[in-house]
Image (cartoon, rainbow, N blue to C red; front, top):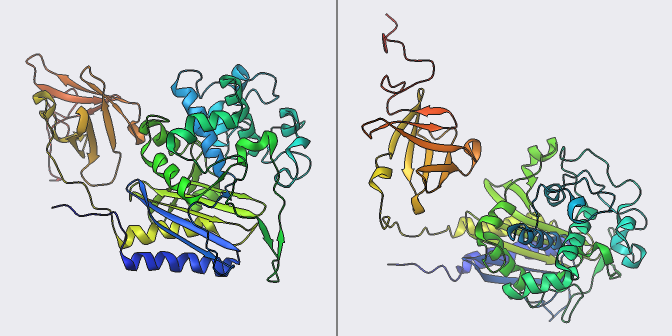
Length: 461
């Protein structure tokens, strides 16, 4: 028997509507629109508005600000996956003469290059991009404020450099490359660099009075890769599904997982807040779950995309005000509401289609000294090593095809796991980055570093 999760329960839908209604009312925003994604598709859409009889739907464009950075990061990682660059490359190798060429591509993606947060001169978000026609205008005379790789310091100019890198290696405008390589394959037909009807207008709401002022809509020019895009909850719902599971037409599941992996050293305050940054994606711990995505803001607009991969739930929230509701909190709450009210139903257990007898021989308990672990077989010939106590170093391992496995996470990430056999073919021990795992604690029959006391185990008497 199977259970459908295609539609949300009425109680869940009402809780979602209540949350965005509170956000729109207390945040004093002209309109707020949201969507929830589960199992790769939008399962709920809601909106609140100050205009009677006019509720925005999933097809109305809002400006999404820095969520644009995630799109730009996707383009850079496509170049890496094609072998055209390495994330450890200095920018100068591919885009010479910027004045910031010592920054590596990974540092630019993770905001750890030490670049300034903003472009010098007039407030770039509220002034024409024509004021900054060249990269030197974006960076200014002193682009670096911190040593590279030492700390996370959010940088809008850094993503301008990444956009210029894409243009240089593709030989086309950033917007054209984005449309051809990401928007069209994913079916994001309502996402664009310039607004297209129907779209919301941007407003500033007076902090001490219920009155509004229209915000100007500027073309950001060179800064476009950092925040230019307009999109809809319908399109961003599709983008969220892609960021959770990948799409081989754009990026593999392995590469989007890399984007979601923390890549920046966190500030002390960030450690307390449980927040860090990956490659073009924000990463945070909230309500006991790991959330990834990105927020965005430009004068007149706020945006948020939040994903819980473990719960298979994502939320998109857009509003047309300069300041107001905390959309990151709203997005996290929408994810929590669905995840708690309607927990993910796991896939049915199924046995492996086949198993290697030599691999099955390795399954079961192993000991590193007196620390007890269990080795389990996973899909595709991989294994996992987990502490029996539930506390300690754990990792999944990828099969290499030569009788060895490579760690995928945690302390053992990148480390080599090998089964060492005796002359008779039996397994002596496991070697994991020089750690010896034996079938018994300090097994006398295995080459334990430092040896085993010949008198063996004993009591205190």
